[in-house]
Length: 374
Image (cartoon, rainbow, N blue to C red; front, side, top):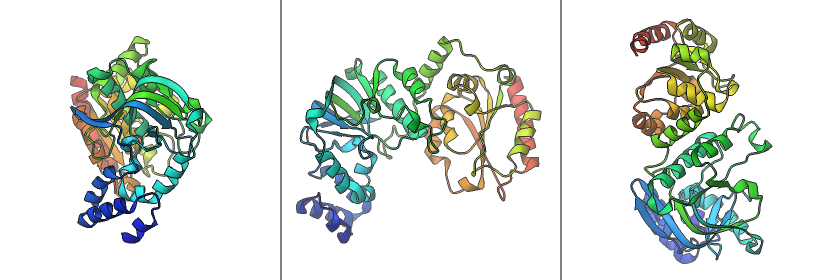
């Protein structure tokens, strides 16, 4: 512990002693102590509204985007980070590993080159530019703008690549980011990525705490989904004929190393039992949202596609096929969604990465009466 702390150059001796004492008490105490480090800005006030915890920075704020050393950090005029800007600022081990290099990059920034984007913005602590994290952040900001009266005329700041950088192995098929932004915020948002690698200058920022222990983390408020569905419906989008007739959907995906071994077999069984096989990668985002909102029973694979749970109607029967590669993972991360959306969810496990044919046939057969009664 002491060797790790000694290696960090940016902390003062006083900060190191304080952090060391807290860490000796417990790892959690050390993590809680990070906020008090002198490297962070003291120009914000901390408040709470409902489940939201946030910082309000009324004066000048600068945003150094993800294009610059993967930062995505808000700082004050002295280049001191706003604590809740980025997940690794509040995670002790990550903090100790990278804080020196990140602060060095911040100190190199030329604020005289900043782009002034005006006043009154809401943003959120940022994680990774993956589909689930982007959508989680957009949902939380959208909900805060809806609920907190002091920011009714504010704009949102997001930060995600919207060019060819999205279309590589890690972000394939995530070109729906722009659609999600527009469906939630309309014209009331900006994407910092569009401004290149120059700092952004603004005034009067509300920054939402998005730590993993925050109540809003992965909650995906239903009111935001309702807004997305309503905006899509206003565009005249309806489910494709097959899905509309059955109200039963099997949400498949392209081949993956994390697939169950008898994927083709179980999908054929589902199809014969009246489930429409739908691959989100082959339809529009609007069609997918419409299909899932209309469906009464959905079969899907475990993984990042579980973010699509947020488009389902209350009471939907959901069956999750869990391959061997996901056996160490828990649905705990998705509990808020399952509860908030009142979903009837059941996991279907594999043995040697195979789903039992007899078990699966029984499930799709038993599901049929409840759907027909609906």
